[in-house]
Amino acid sequence: MKNLYSTKLISHSTGFIIPLGILFILFGITSIILSSIDLYYSRSILSFPIKISTSINVTDTKNSTNSTNIINSTYITNTLLKRIFIPNAFSEQSIWPTLGKGIWCGLFFLVVGIFSLIVHREKTLISIRILSLLAFISLFISFFLFLSSITVFQRYIVEGRFNSYKRTSYEQKEVVVNALLLVCGVLSFIISLVLAIGTLIAGNFCQQQSDDFEDIDYFNQQQQQQQQQPPAYSTQPYYG
Image (cartoon, rainbow, N blue to C red; front, side, top):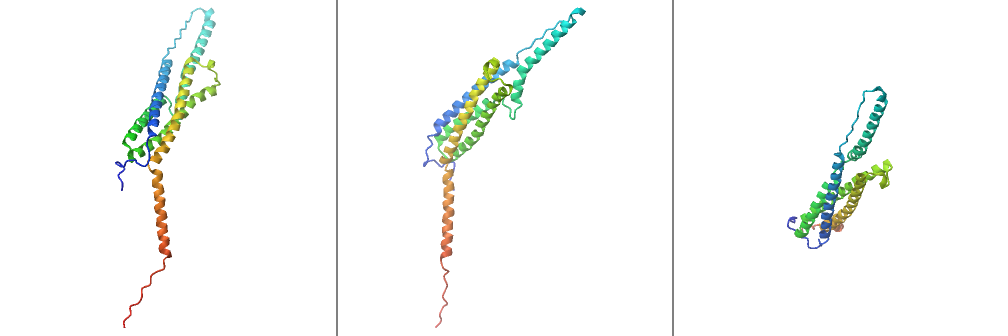
């Protein structure tokens, strides 16, 4: 039984891991920065104070005017609350929580990128197989980043606000940030797929499977040859 911890990869090159690892690191840093910007603007918008001042006069002649002012101020308050809180609540009530998605997705991309550079230095069979597992996990992480970025555009499509002049400055920044996160998700998915296929080949997964099939064919041929040979009959001893 071969030692997977000390087996060096000689038959397959691992040079393709270096550029993929560097791209993973770049996408990880970019996703963390973009998601941090999104969280910063989201926090500043949610902490915006709403001040409502109403004055009630004692005279009966102005009761109708005061009630109208109270109704108008209530309407304005509800409009502001809907504009501020509903978009964020919609994003957080989706299938998965999407707040800060680029941060933890970016951290995982950083781990994969740094480990890829370590694998290229070590060039052991066990390290390349662990990297293959991380590449397959990165496929699902990238797909989640892609889907969670689409939900932001889905909200504006449902509300019918396609053009930029129908959105506020914060909403416009949210669209730009999530568009960049969507691009990062798509590109990281492609890189994860390439890394997964490359590590499968370099990790001798396909070679091991072909060796198993060759052993099975050899065993079947030996069985057929033994069945085709006639049985050897032993001669009776002659006593003269």
